Image (cartoon, rainbow, N blue to C red; front, side, top):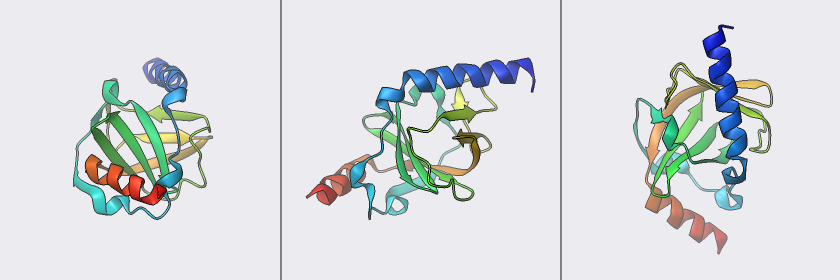
Length: 133
């Protein structure tokens, strides 16, 4: 592993540990079809905009850029029973962006990204509010 990639991974790991308080699994995600609320595929997510992560299921994760901007990350295959409390490292090809070519390693298991799609945040919030009732 090159020194640049090692330092990049270490920096990302530290930033994720610092954001651990913002990382949470939504209890009201069961039964919500996030695929239906996902729009067009995007080329990347700006790293400085990654605010928090929500666990959806073994194939999906939501990355929040801010309160009104979120992305559905779909993995190539199952990222077996991960929880957001597990150690997470984002291995990226760019210092400031998350691309579909990158991967998220959770609890030592690499989870390859298939695509990143923008989410309809008002629809997500409405579905979660409805699921909590």
